Image (cartoon, rainbow, N blue to C red; front, side, top):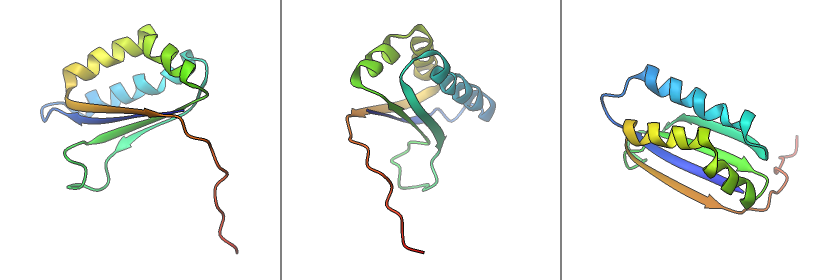
Length: 106
């Protein structure tokens, strides 16, 4: 189960506010059982992202974990913070079978 969030922060939002929110988001993996992995970062391809500046990817064990994640009070608080700091955001959720990484021959 993959949960992807694209964020476009308002121009006046400081780098410190963004870093604080990133830390809060990453702490969710400590309080929501079933989160396998989380990553959040800045866009590297300026001009190709339709204005989105940051992305969050959360890998979860199942759609049931997504439901628990969305309902968790800590997640709800972060969503409210995002609504205040972001001009726009987009979420996309999908179930994907995990395949082992392809390795090139030495």
